[in-house]
Amino acid sequence: MTQDELKQAVARSAIDYVVENEIIGVGTGSTANFFIDELAKIKHKIKGTVASSEATAARLRGHGIDVFDLNDVAEIAVYIDGADEIDASGAMIKGGGAALTREKIVASVSKQFVCIADGSKLVEVMGKFPLPVEVIPMARASVARALAKLGGTPKLRLKPGTEEAFVTDNGGYLLDVAGLSITDPKALEAQINQIVGVIAVGLFAARGANVCLLGTAEGVKTLKF
Ligand SMILES: O=C(CO)[C@H](O)[C@H](O)COP(=O)(O)O
Image (cartoon, rainbow, N blue to C red; front, side, top):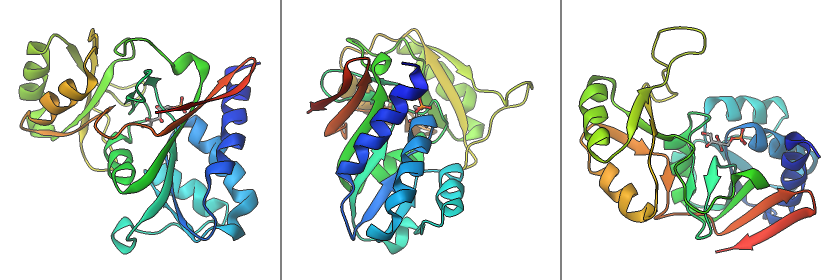
């Protein structure tokens, strides 16, 4: 099976976690996109959605699915999103798709976090995938120095094919931090959150996944945390 077929399989399985007549939080990325396409088939059964990025909102609306502003929503039943890495405790690295801050906000107000990922995303120790950190543009260099002190090698994310900084939906810059071996995700998340100028770190440990649907050649495996 191709990686896309594995992603499609978990996206289909995630439909079982959609709560009828409720608001659903929707993530960002290729796996989340497959989920949106599946959600469209049962859109009449949900109250609507909250999106974690402009791209996700556009895709949801393109399918005729209602997208609410988070400020108008008191509670989200379930948040469904992909990950760049996930460990055996349900902690994740996210933000490869640049939406980590809004993803973290939507996840924080959701009763359940269902992670959907192909099997390659499950790792023993996270850090091979460079950890994305969203920063206020004027603090780019100072935050990079602080991240280097933690043992990482931060690199400013650029707009593809240019020398210009990539700008997030929130007007932030992204530092992708290579070379970390994340043995204590909660401690590192707390440490990075303390750096002045950081908007959010793509380490989801304090609020990790409750369930991970993992696409493998043997079928979709369900991990519960
Ligand atoms: O965190 C994310 C976006 O900010 C994505 O969930 C993550 O990058 C995984 O993406 P994909 O489903 O395309 O592999």
